[in-house]
Image (cartoon, rainbow, N blue to C red; front, side, top):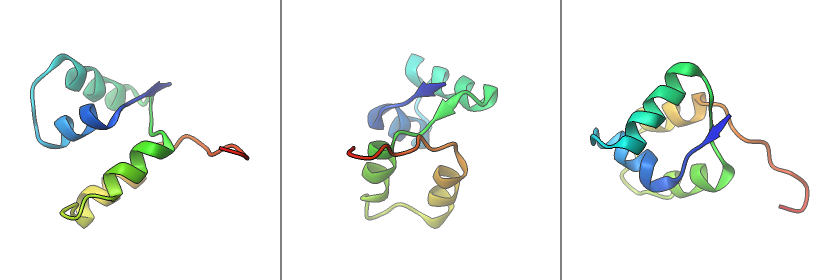
Length: 69
């Protein structure tokens, strides 16, 4: 599994071309991406996040929260 950080995921959503975005695209294709809880929280805090993007994010595998986290 590969976790992703916020800046790389935002760059991916904005269609940027960069090495980290390429690796993210590959992880999505290979189904090896996992969304850390902090990333989902940060992305959903954006006021202009569309429902379509929210659906895409929620369809990706989520890292489970552990008690005490």
